Image 1: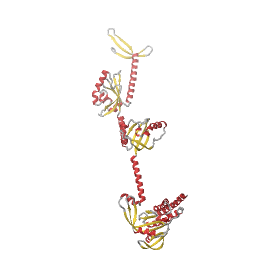
Image 2 (image 1 turned 180 degrees about the vertical axis):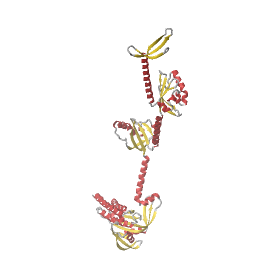
Image 3 (image 1 turned 135 degrees about the vertical axis):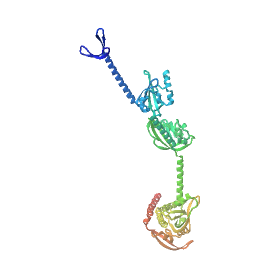
Image 4 (image 1 turned 90 degrees about the horizontal axis):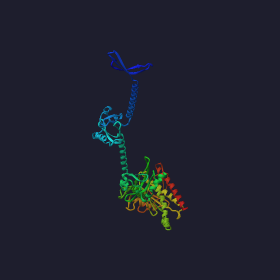
Length: 557
């Protein structure tokens, strides 16, 4: 230990110890050893305090670094030479380099080449002049990753004047930009969908100012989108409505009372050229982040109403045509307006005539004659529908009906005409029971069956008429018949079937035919099961005849 210094522990008189430095030296001439002792108590205390402070500082630095590493944003600290002094864990995640690869490198390593080349000169210019271009601001820039890819980010820079260091936070905007792009794409898609809509669309503010229109609006109304935006919606309304529109909006916003909101209504709209048109207006309210907006859809119904009117006219025309002609003939005539003529080998024809019509009507007013014929013939018309027959025409007091064979009721045309004739007399009795003012009436009815030619004649007023020997014979059966009786030919008896009761009248000389055996139709049995549809119709006809009687009694009263 001679000639050296050494830290040892010394003991005091009171028994306490303390640290000290011991230095020993020898004096050769005297043979004595000299020792110097310096008390280290205060030095040790100061050293311990320094160590504690350093530990606290290190813990604080570790805490700060942990906080920075937990940040959602990348952090860089650079010096005045732009050399990276510190980075956080997020920087590693975002850029791909390790902390070790970052430290000591120039910050321009994270910049695209076009920006990196001028970065150092910008920092030098700032340090020389103090002019801040980006320090203390936020700015969107493009950053560069280790793999060479780039991404959008927001850069914020701050300077620590005491240390001369510059701190930068980088927020990756990739997800935000993607979300913005998606929102923008959806918005554009919505705009395209709205523009593709057939109906006009208007979005207005609480003050009635137009904020958005679609392409259909410009087509329908004639104004461009630029001419629409910023104008009051009353520009598309006729004057009488435009003057009150703003007051309606104010009243709705104040009271919440909905007059048109959430409903559809037909209104008049005005075009740029001043013309008006009918439209359907539908309105709804939209809460756009606390701001009320109103969306209106407008559908031009001009064409629709024209089509409906044309359809109504066509249906009325068809209805009139079907009333004039048999349905299947009317349909053929619509498809082919050329002449229609058909040969029917087995058709039953009925003529009915009022007995003594000329003498009766000679003392009646024209009005009474028409009213009487309309009443009784209306009853016959109903029965024509019941038995699915064809009313050919009326000539004065003569009523002509035929049955054209079809497959609908198994070609039982003759039997249906016979049942129709029997029900005609029921209708006459019902009419007579009403006590007509000019007395009771009676009919003669004649029926024949055979071959006829049928067709449509005329071009102005269509008539479905029939010609042939059977038609002439049916007319002769009526003319030579008896009042209140149904006179028929032998062919009718053979065609009608077993459900009918006929009485032979005898042989009559018929004009144009000579001697003919004729019969009187007396009655008919109830329809069998195969005629269930006729039975139902007949039941309906009975109720209808009673209704006619009740109506006549009501008028007489």
